[in-house]
Image (cartoon, rainbow, N blue to C red; front, side):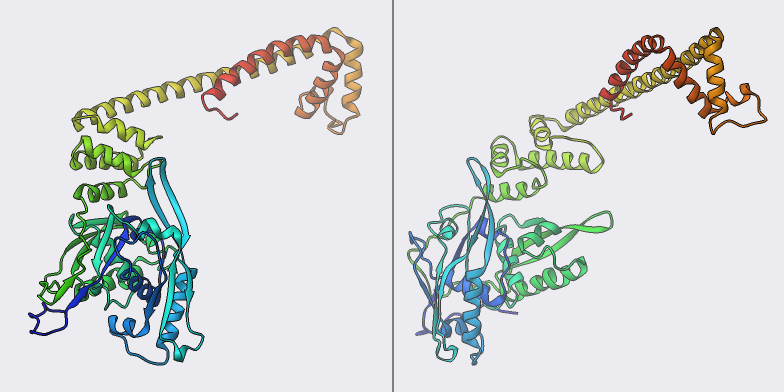
Length: 460
C-alpha cells in the first residue's frame, strides 16, 4: 500500500500537479472504456487549461504515457496507444443534463479526429481532437464539476475502478452514495454483462475497493440493500485514504492559474436526493433544489421514503411526483399518514359501493333476460294454441327435422332444445309484428343496464 511521501530532498525536481476536470453530467454519463482508451482520455484531459475557450489538437507522446502510468515500453506500446485513441474516436457517450426546459440527453462522439503514424515502430506521439459537443463538459467549467489529481488513477489497471473512483470522489464531502444495481450497471455501460450479482460484485465492486484503497486518496466500504432475496442497491461509504494521502511537499507546484472549485454541499445533497427519484416520472433536479430551498434534507428524504414504501406495499399512486409535492407541504408526517389513511378508507368504501352496485345491476340484467325468454315462450305457446293450421305446419316441420326421434310423442320431441329453436324461429317468422314490439321494449331495458354496468368496469 502506498505510504505518505517523505519530505523531498533539496534540489529534487518539482512535480506539477496535473488536474483532471469533468462536468458532473459527464462523470455520470453512460459509457465504457477499455484501459488504453481511459489512459488516452485522462492524459488528454490534463492538457486542457481551465481558462481554455476552445479545443485544440492535443499531442500525446508515447514516452509520457509510459512514464505516467508506469508501463513497460515494448514494440506493442505505440500500437496500443494508437488503438486506444482510435477506439476513443469511435466511442459514443450518453449524458443527461438539467436545462430550464427539463432534462435533456446528449448522445455524441467523444473525439472528432485522431492523427497517428502509419509505422507503429516509428511512432512517437498521436494527436487527438475532441468533438465540439464535449465543450460544456470539459471547458470553462464554473460549477457542478469534478476535479482531481491524475496521480490518483495512474496505477489503476481497471477502467471500472477509475469510473467508480470518479463517482465516489464526487460525493467525498457527503461521505456516502447510493446506487441501485441497475443504475450503476447503466452508468458503467454493462447492463448486459455480469447477470449474476456475485460476479458483478467480485469483478467490479470488490476490485474497485481493493484498487482505491491501495492507489488513490479515497477508499470505501459498502452495504447491500435487498429487495426480497436479491440485492437491489449498494450504499458506498466514502472516506479519505490516510494511508495514501500525502502532504504537499515543497517541491510540488500547482499551476497558478488553477483554482480549486468549492463544490457546494447543497448541490451534492440535491444530486443524492434526485438519485432516489429516478424511477418517478417527471422527476428533475430543479424540483429537488426547490424543495431544499424550503425544507431540510431530512424533511425531503422522509417524505420520499414514505411514498416509496407505500408503492412497495401495493399502494396505487398514479402521479408519484404530484403526490410527493403535496406531502412536502405537510409539516407533520403523522397528520399526513392519518390523512392518507382516511383517503384510503374513503377509496375502499367507494370501491365496496361500486362492487355492490355492479352485483345488483348484473342480477337485474340476468332477471330481465330470463323474463324475456319466458315471455317469448308463453307467446309461442299462446299462438300455437290459437292457430290450428300453424300448429299442424310446425308439427310436420319437426317430424321432418333431423332432431326428431320416432317413437316419442310430438309433445316429447317439442321439449328438446334444438327443436324448440326451430319452433320459435318459425312462429316468430309467422307473427313478426308481435315479437318486434316485445323485443323493442326488452332491447331498451337491456341496453340501459349494460351501459351502467360497463361504466363500472363490467366487461360483458
